[in-house]
Image (tube, rainbow, N blue to C red; front, side, top):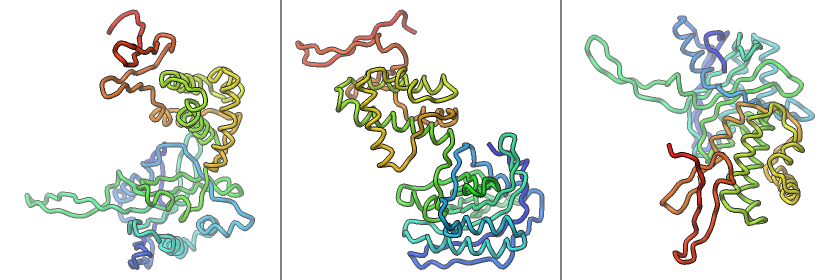
Length: 343
């Protein structure tokens, strides 16, 4: 999504962050890193930017006092006063250390960088980047036919990243993140350190509504209407076709084309209210459908009918071509499939 070759690093500082809960030390550098060669500059740009592949935006949580959000306040100061950069990078590092209070949070190196020429689509931004390296890898080095090893950072594997774009300041800036977190520390980067929420755009609305649909089919539909697994898969397939064939989402059209039955529609609406409250998400009635979000959701919209450990049936098309029954003599359920030709 972002071409590192079009971007430039204006200044970058790095600090070593320990785990506060384990009383590990943190070390703060005295001055920004020298970018001595074009090779180093290009390698850092690749490391910083190549992992941002999806237009999934966030924004700092807004409050009556924006200074209540530490990183948002510091970002504003850096954007308005370039001379204060390194001092503010230390403040960011100290904040990261202060919130590293879970024993499973890994220590690492925090890079803080001001960037220019960050090109996304047809727009070009200035940006503040925060990038944490937690994992070192072993590399082989061959010099003069002598082999050795060295620990280093894989520039193709950013562990955690945040790109704060200098735009929409009043709404909390537009932010992209990378977070290869395990379940234990899943909320650490987003909530404890950055304090951000999803940007209310087509990507998040699409994802939220498709999540709602998938969870409804899995949790509520069978319980309330006793539908077969094949019928559940058919509804998910119709839902996926709806999102793939429309550019704009309209809830009324979705209910008519995908759900159909008035009782199912009413059940779906009631489930949606609870889903939004329990997950603290917004599910809009009208929005621009994000192809990126649809593509991502396609990975979890399962169209596989699993029959014991013997068969997997992939249902992609006409639901009327598969029938379910029960053979009393065999004492087993069965499915009958209709088709024109075998391939």
